[in-house]
Image (cartoon, rainbow, N blue to C red):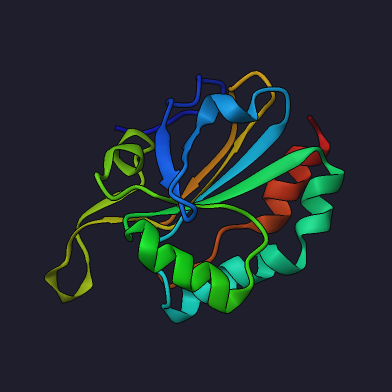
Length: 155
């Protein structure tokens, strides 16, 4: 399954690091950047999420919320968020439903780990429509954040 630009963003309800449920609906009326990432504490994921942390004001200035999603448990994500001082929510897709709905899912990942989120970036507008979608096959690659910002600036 994959998500196409101009289609409605698949709904999700996931648990954040404070063990509260967060839904796509919660972001209605503002833009949302959804970042799927394979695993907390890995070098590329850390670099990616820290770059968002350091640029959060840019996103806030574009009336945009950011969430990071992985299949890690809320407890692992909580530790990761705390260690990296991340200033946006991390959501646990432990049941792997959101990753699959967005087409950002490895059946098999490194070390024969099954069912891991692919690195991906989506921009959802105020109405819940996908305006940008990039799913990376290689976990070593980073999303094109310039393209993400350009999309947001045009909304």
